Amino acid sequence: MADKTTQRTQEMGDNGAFSPNVTVLATRAAQLRMVEALLFAATEPLDVASIAARMPDGCDVPALLSELQNEYAKRGVNLARVGDGWRFRTADDLSFLLRQEQVEQKKLSRAALETLAIVAYHQPVTRAEIEEIRGVSISRGVLDVLLETGWIRMRGRRRTPGRPVTYGTTPGFLDHFGLENVRDLPGMDELKAAGLLQTEIPENLKVPSPSDDEALAPDEDPLEEDDVNEELASISDEDEPSAS
Image (tube, rainbow, N blue to C red; front, side):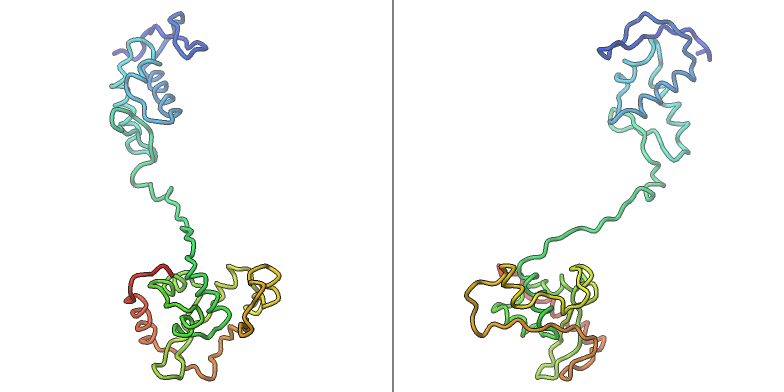
């Protein structure tokens, strides 16, 4: 095909159709630009018939697509065939530029929220003490999830039989809940005012004054690396979660 040929083109009317009443000089380069423009503006892949319907009569659309594909082969955007259609897309080796990492938001279970509250108010606290306060055993993964969020940490080992690991909150906990200090957590009166405690409260119910002092308590010993691994293993090896 000669580089310059006189092509009978069609003018698109208000209804989106073309009317054969305009004749212009359509070069090969012009045809390539037309196909390029159609593909660039398309919101989904275009097949040959869809492209040909908007092109001057006699255009070799498959040949134009092949030529465009070769021209874009070494660019940041490639012309790719998708099923029966064609579309521009980012070159495979540059896809990392458009990758976006997002933090997946997960809603904590009721058991996790209760456990977090107990740790915050009663720290340093052991798993057995958490279960005693909640009245039920801790389901599998609850402590694991809270450790993963970075809201609680292992503090030390209690100087009692079995030497259980103690837990406390972290600076990440304060940051997430907008607290300057763990002592800013609401007390009994504030919980009542917010309607978070029932009107009739058992006489023996007390909301302790929390403390997240970095220093170990008198009845705590420092944790060793093996202690952490052992505790993590015991958390992971617990039974499947219950409804609690």
